[in-house]
Amino acid sequence: MNYRQRFTFFLMLMVFASPRIFAQGQTHGAATAKKPPSISQKAAEQQAVDAQEAAMVREAEQLKADLEKAGDEPGAQLRVLQAFLWRYPHPPAEDEILKLMIRDANRLDRQGLALRLDERLQKLDPGDLGQRIRTLNLLLLNRDRESRLRAQNYARELLRLTAVKAAQAAPAELGEQRWRRDMNRLQALADLLAGTADRHLGQNAQAAARLQSSLKLDPTEEAAEQLGQVQEAEHQPGKALDAYALALALPGETIAERYALRGKAGALYRRLHGSEAGFGDLILRQFDAVAQAEAARAPAQAQLAASTQISQIAFPSLDGRLHRLADYRSKVVVLDLWATWCGPCRVEHKLLEQLKRSYAGSRQVVFIAINADNDRSRIPGFVKNEGWGAHTWLDAGLMNRLNINSLPTTLILSPAGKLVYRESGLDPASFKQRLRQAIQAAMRRPKQRRLASDPAARKRLGRFNF
Image (cartoon, rainbow, N blue to C red; front, side, top):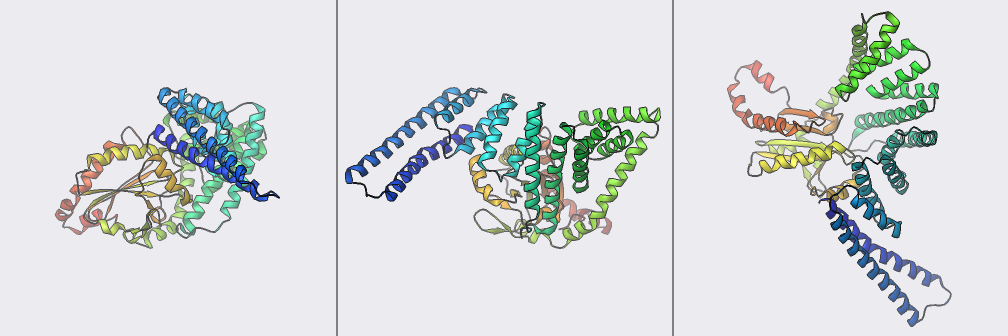
């Protein structure tokens, strides 16, 4: 379903929902009146409803024509939608209209407008934590004091809501380990955003406490770098240097950003020590500390991974049926793990669809999408709106057992049921080429296994057993 098709769907929802809402309101008023309406009054009320419905149909047809006329020019559709909301401020599909408007605002790089629309969308569903995080991220980009105060208030409310969510019992399909890990990450992100808001307002002691809490729950490069900036502002260069070294020891986003961080940390080290001699050793010490902390958690994760064979996990699908990977032995299985809140997952989905078409005539390769959302009520509407089709499985412990920590993640199982390929994250430029090569290698794998007759070779080839 493309952009216009998606909007037309919600437009029809408005056309048919609004008159009925109007009619229900009229009926309620009639029911509470002391005197029942006469036949002529009922006829007049029905005429009013019919007129309202006819007006909405005309409006929908005009809006569809305006959108067609606007085409794909950035901003043109946004103007049409703004005019529509001016006439109908709160239509039944208001949230979807706002999302479409945010899309165009981002294409135009109009951050101020995108923020206003995001805040309006947040008010429609205050309990949507993903929307709150998106709004807060946009608000933190602003430099004026009013925006920074609003960001701080938003961050405090996010902290409260994440604490409430973390106190809930783990859903049965996720298990306690996976739930606790996810909640730690959510609370770490809330602490990071709150610490950033506090830092922007110069409340450094409070910011440092929030950032240290974030690092304790889920160490990230951004939290460590932010903590270093706070400690520099507090004239604590030694502590700041340790924080920067920790940031460099943790996984980062881009080489350019890490190079800039390395330059900042190196300059601080030279100021304290006169040269960069020993700077690399500091980063290695931080790396070793991070690795040891991760290793301390590994035994429990490894035990969890080995507790059940993933080939026998019963994955429910949206239609209620159960599926097992064991049913696909003798085929190469490509697993796409995704979530509705994951932006890169949408990009990867388009690339996977292109790749699937090239294997459409092959009976040897199967593509399976597995959703990892905690809130499953969002999935049916999402796949329908995106035009993805309803054939998707729901995760029933796979991410736990394979210790998958990020999305999207792509897995390939060989015809013998071995896990032979795993990629987390997305590099759009090389994704299809690498995945195609891995699929072809997996298709050749059974022959290679027959040739491997010595025990050592069999052990190497079978190290990814379920």
